[in-house]
Length: 454
Image 1 (cartoon, rainbow, N blue to C red):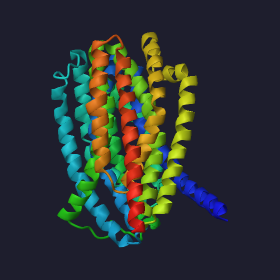
Image 2: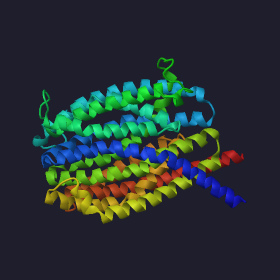
Image 3: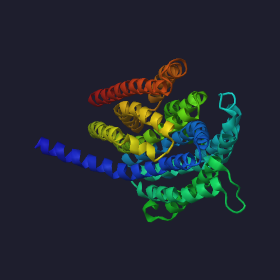
Image 4: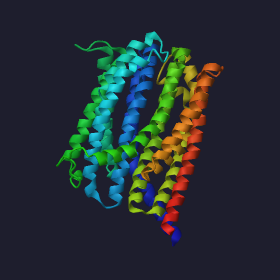
């Protein structure tokens, strides 16, 4: 009888995970597709335009993910309130999250306006400076929309309604192509801006996405039980501090990982446009595929967070085990597809023979870390659901910036490995992060088990 019960429970939890994961995955692919479309459209203009996008994105993406990552604290807070059967707390959580998001978005916007001043210091070639700078100036105006959209997205996903976000993301993905074309090639009063036009198109789209989701959550009947827009609360210092205390480590953990990947474009820029363009293609491919374990991790945060609120430790551990098993299977499939279709994948980005040759070589390194990447992001998602965010922050800082960055920098700049050296550093960093995060997750489960028995 116990085996039947366990089997039924496993099926139920897998169903719940995939119910959340599939629409979240489509959403993640759509949002990652924004960068993919930028890269492909810039790549078909010229290697210089593609390199300028690589440099601009290399600085914008860490800022984007740092500040939007902070707002991911909304997910475990709402999930906990649901699990603890205290839905009356949810409106206050969302009001305060939106206040924090607005302030953080303005700060991020100002940072992006100043970042072009760093480009010469970082050794970016003068030929890339104008387009990369304009890209950063333009895309910065969308940052308040990004942070507020993340707060609302976390709210609706944590309630178990990920599909509205998916629909908005897919519509936005389709809208980006004509918007990019208008700003890249010029139309009417809008001048030809080349790859820098992607920044204007993306900023406009980010505001449209936020306004669309805000209007939907205000009108749709399924949100009427929480009614977050009926009465508006002033900013509350205690709540703001709680959100920042939980969210800042999440944002920093994401920042440490993504900034390592993004800074690679800066490190490689003295090696020439061909190397930077090839690296950008390989990074873009892995960013698309990373959406699979990332979506699973978000689903794990919601499910683990709900059981954390219920204090149902046995169910929480079952969700974690099933999540890691699913991550393993997805990674093995991803590795196989990347190995088989390497040339076809690269050909979608560029027709340049030299760039193609280097990019196909770099994708081999990306295949090597798929398992570790899937395990580490899944473990981090579980820990986030348990509201343990500080330890992943310190682990990622150690793994990526204390270990991986100096190794990658040395191998890329001072050995014959070139771009491959950066990727070796990434593999080492991900392996360390994966090991430590899994250990931390095991220790947390052991602690909760002991507390439940005492």
